[in-house]
Image (cartoon, rainbow, N blue to C red; front, side, top):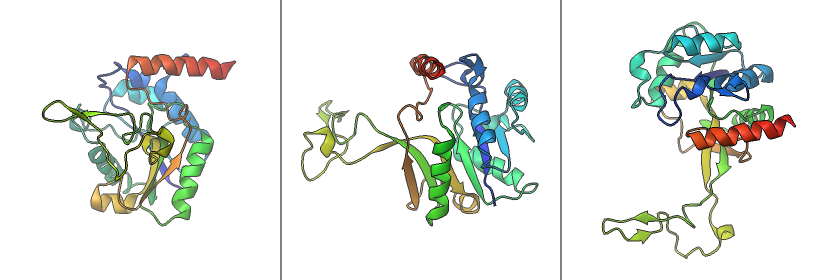
Length: 229
């Protein structure tokens, strides 16, 4: 059975206003997530979850399905993605047949076919609850990062029995970026995506580039132009 793909896209955004439909290299940001998901042929359906009619119309134009709009209470700045997913999956399961879901972040426009393929393959191969894509974190919390204590003295937020003096010696830490595939039946019982039976597939820093702020958008524009050469 093929998984379904859900792409969350609310209208509100603090870091970049209207970022989900803002043009990136001449196309709405959300279009890249929709296009890559549809062209991969990995999914039985590609849905967009949004409360906004403008986003809905643009998403439909690029081929996504929007069988219903998300309640506005699930689209606020304080909304939890787990609540949004729970609501969306519960509504969809009465009309569609699926047992796994890929959550696709539309703010990571460079996720491609191979990234999705590797994550799906890992999920099918391993007896796990979910599989994330991830980029090696830099800086690493075991090396090169500092946190302030109550007296405003700096300390290393993650400690080991030995002090890390070289970046290469630090344990691998990942930024969870772009996509996660998960068992939808288990999720409906726990409302948890990250469990003690979650795995990760490493992707490149470029593919995991996430747009949260204006600087990120500027970098994405440069990456797009470089790809077009």
